[in-house]
Structure formats: structure tokens, C-alpha cells
Length: 79
Image (tube, rainbow, N blue to C red):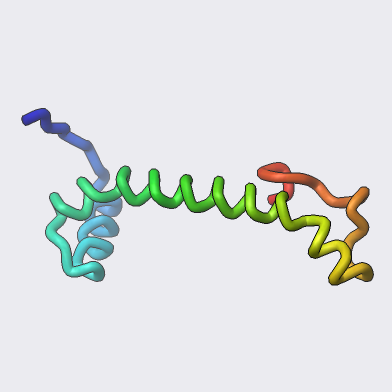
């Protein structure tokens, strides 16, 4: 099975260990799960942005006093 050696500073490693402990996971399991969690987070963000864009007109109709649609920045540029 492929493996990966990752170098951390002492401070970084302590932070990762603390995060793993906070989740009740071993360091190995925690580091293994990070890219999987990131993939799910990105999928969620893409879905949320898409959902927001699909419902933008409804929001504009329901809250006409909010930022005018023409002045809004769209999608990932809005942050």
C-alpha cells in the first residue's frame, strides 16, 4: 500500500496532534482523513453556490431592500 512521509515543524505537529486528539482519532487516521474531508467540503461549497445562484431571483423578490442585484458580485468572487 502506498504511503507518504510528511514533514512538519514541531509547532505544526503539535497543532495536528491536538486536532486529532480533539476528534478522538489517531494522528495517522486524522491525517488520512484530511483530503477526504476537504473533497466533501469543496463539493458542499460548489452545491451551495449553485443553489444560491438558482434562487437569487427569489431572494431579490423577497428582500428588495437588500443589495441591488446589479451591485452584487457573483459566485466565488463574492467573498
